[in-house]
Image (cartoon, rainbow, N blue to C red):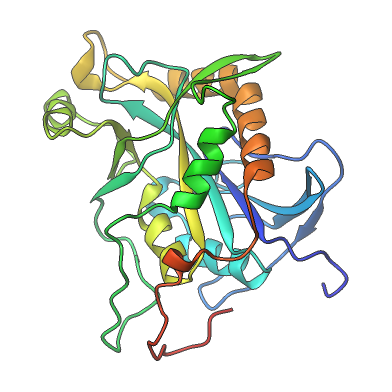
Length: 279
């Protein structure tokens, strides 16, 4: 393990995003106080940088959103040296003008989950700042990755439109929303619906890792269209169709990151006595 490069950057792949490196990668099994992560962590190279990759749901999609070992995943990445995390994910759109193929770099999050372990701090009166849940530096890098106009990314696989804001509501899953729930979310002014963005984002903040979600729209949520509603098979098919350009966007985002250390704003534990040392 000591001979491995220490990856300061990581990508956590979502549904349908189970590998990242075109060339050979080293797979590392990591033990944590919270058990094993979703899969061994792959360490490879992107644009000359050592990068870690972890498939959020496991290599064979073994984990549902509500059973994911979120704490083990983030702890494992931090222990390998990671300080900055891109978190691509599949989302439903709550806006008719953000259809499938849209990529959003959200700036806000709403938690509608329940029963998920969502903190490393079970005592001690520690309360992290989370008003702005995503790292501005990483969000800016993701938007720059789309190109000079920051509105599209092109590749042989197609073209994705990139939006540089958005509020993502995270639901418990594994079921999709009812039409009434979907219309309620949209009525609040929220833009995207997802099942895994929380507690992942807050756990990264507690471990003082910069974190940004990059959301690929796979469907219009149930409240925006008629018919039978959202079906998993269609979501996976849409994600697969856009996976090539989406991976290219992630590679460009990694290359666009300035620096490899946690930014000052994401160092939220300064001056606080923690009950344990960060890995």
